[in-house]
Structures are given as structure tokens and as C-alpha cells.
Length: 570
Image 1 (cartoon, rainbow, N blue to C red):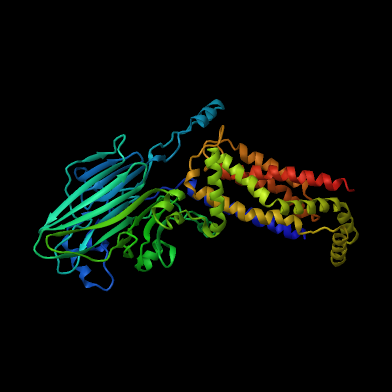
Image 2 (image 1 turned 180 degrees about the horizontal axis):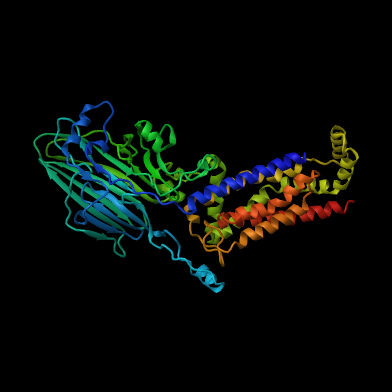
């Protein structure tokens, strides 16, 4: 029975090691890589959508056949836009959104408290990259842009795609104090067809409304579709996980949400294997990464087609196009879509589109992770501190499993009480393993001891620990969130390793309250676990170590009390 407990602890230790390795892959030093080749689209129709089964879609792509550099742009054709939360560029060639910065999310937090403490103890203070996180990027290494346009059906006049050059009267737009929204208009006219492309930004919001107004001043009808897509080259500056750790890392790639299948991941490999072609009412298409997401959200009252393409130069496209709309002569029509580009804050995303909050991926433990996140959020709303929220959740989890822990600790206390007698049996029947097991089970029955009772706390902690790992690693609210004193970022390791050392001490104290394994080899291995765990926890996020310290402390208090109560019955 001791073997079962030993196996569980070894399994738990293995999970800790895998998680630590996965965390290092995301936050550890990255290797130098060569930049990708400048992506020049020799055939511009390659990155345009085509409606399934309609040859008409191959014709409009010939409208703009000049080779266009998609990642290198001229500053003369750029409009800069700044709101209270976003700073971005709109390229007049197609109205493509690029170089979008999230102003409230610096790459690295300037931590004056930690810097002062490091200086006091004679440690060096590294310079911080306090520039905002860049979500859309026109650079070769991290190419990521949001494109949109119109495609005319066969036999009709031309339409502006994301390769078409628009006109605009201003080169910069700023959301002024007291101004709730900001609209950037782009215009294009050809053969009596005028298209006005409007981007509307709202204060405090990461969603951008796109309107494409079509005015047909010609003498014949026009018919076409709107498309909106995300074009991305995978970030080659991140290391890929190995066989053991790859499945535990935060997912980066395409996702879609449909009325029928709901949330689905469409990886770059999936896009390379086969082009996606799905029709659905409502839904959305997105590219997601650690902490942040970008999604095109078409109107929910129409049937939309979702598509993907793997382009020849290492770029990938995921997007949506609308049903065809006919605009009669001397009349007009309007296409609408919404672009989300920002942090994966679940309450905010729930209001933007159904299922968008699922981009916060808690892996296969979502059914546990979401309630934990909800509870963390509720406590944070009351306390205003994510560290206190973690402590509060730990208390709630301990209270939830209090009866189970109570029974388990009583069982371990009884096991500790009969430990000398078990040792005596082991020595008496050292040469007869079968007789020893028979006598041991008889002793358990006589003393009413459940030998498996001590395994229950470990079994309970494994899924909770894994869920907290995913919640802390995926929830953007924990990114750069301060707790107190030297812990100024709960999402990274303790800069002075104080919490991991405390965790190791509490683990050692808790271990001393448990009955030691009878097998001397197992006992020796078990004594090493506090040291091994401390080493690995040095590199875990401070928030996760904080949970473990509080959990261990509460367990020590509860277990010490029960052990004393059982000892009185001797």
C-alpha cells in the first residue's frame, strides 16, 4: 500500500517537471534564428478567398496583378491611429491593419521595487523592454496583419481587395479626451463604383468595427462579397516543445467557432494539409497566442464561409467571406464586420461574440479551470489583489475538501501510530513477504486503518495543481500582476526565490507528519522530494508557488491538530 502512495508522489513529481520544462520553453531564453525571406506575392490572387464551387471567384483576382510586398510598406501610404488602449497603422494599400500596439500591456514591467532590492543586495539590475506588446506586426520575422476587401462576382465591375490603393485626407487620427469613438474613412472609386471603408474605434475597447459602403453610380447592377482575413507567418523566434512538453504549452495558431462544431483549433499544419471550407451562421475566425487573440467576427444573422490557405512562402491565412450582395444601379449597400485585437480577458470577450472567451485555453481541464477562474475573479473584484485572490481560492479549495482531508489525515495519523508495530512485523517476517502482507492487512483491519487514505490528498491536488498551472499561464490578468513586497509579478518566478524555499520548508514539515515508508529505499527517495520540488519550483510562476505555500501551511495546521488528537488516544 505504501507503494501506491509512492507511485502517486512520483507521478506528481513528473508532472511538476514537465510543467516546469514547458514554462521554460515559453519564458526561458530563446535561440537565435534567421529571418524569413521577404514575402513578395508574385501572384496576388493566391491570398484572396475563393467561393467553393464558383468559378466566378477566379476572375476578380486578376484585377490587381502587380507584385506587392506584403511586409514592406511605404510610410507615405500609412495612416497612424491612436486611442486610449491601441496604437496602430492602417496601410492605404487595401486598408490593412498592421503594427498594432497594446498600450496597457508592456513587454516587460518596469519593477522599481525589485530593482531597488536587487541593488541593495549588490545584484545587477537588467534593463527592461517597456515598449507595448505588438500584436499585428509588419516585420519579416513576425509578420501578422488584418486584411479585408471586396471581391466582385463574375461579369461585374472590379472591386477593391486588400491589394487596392485607397485614398484618405489625413495621415493620423487620435482619440481626444472626452471623445468616445473615432472613425477613419478610406475611399476608392472606379467605373462608377465608390467604396468607402470605415474603421471605427471606441474608447477603452479592443474591438474595431469595419463598414464597407458600396455606392453604385453606374448604369448596371454590381454583385460581390466581403472578405476579412488574418495573414500570419508563424513566429520563428519561439522554440517548439519536445515530445514530453509540446502538448502542455500554450497553443498558438488558428481557431474557428461555428454554430455546429463550436470551438475548433486549426493549426498551421492543418492549414498546410487541407484548405478549410466551412459554412455557418455567425461564428468567428481567429489567430491566438499566449495571452492575446485576434479575431474577425462577421454578422451573426447571415451565413458566413470560413476558409484557410497555406501560401507558398510560409504564410498562412484564416478568414471569412459573406454571401453575395447585389447593388442595383444608382443604389447602395453596406457590408459590416468586427475585428477584435487584444488581451484574452474572458468577461470582456463574452460580450463581444459567443464563444470568444474559449480562446483562453485551459486544455482538457477546462471544466475545472473555468470555475477556478470565476472564483479568482470574484475574490479579486472584492480584494483588488490577485495574490489575495489566490490565497482566497486556496482557502475555498481546502474548505471544499475538508471532510476528505480530515478523513485522510486521520488515516495517516493512525498509520503513524502503528508504524513501530509494522516495522516489527517487517523484521519478523523479513524472509516471508506473503506472510508479512497477510499480517499487515490483519493489523490494518484490527486498528481500522485505511492504507489508501493517505493517497487522497495527492489525488485531489494533482488536477487542482494542473488547473492552477493553466489558469495562471493562460489568464492575462495575472500577467505582470503585483502581490506585495518583492512579488511584483505573479506570472513569473520569484526574483529572490523566497517563496520556493518556504515551499520546500513547508513540504519538509508536512512530510515529517506523515508515516515514513517501511521500505528504506522508498524512505530515502521520499526524503529527497522537498529538495527536488524546491529546485523545480524556483522557476515556476510566483502565483503557483504562493498557492502551494498556503496549501501546505493549511495542511500542516490541520494535520498537526489531527495527529495530536489521535496521539491522545494511545
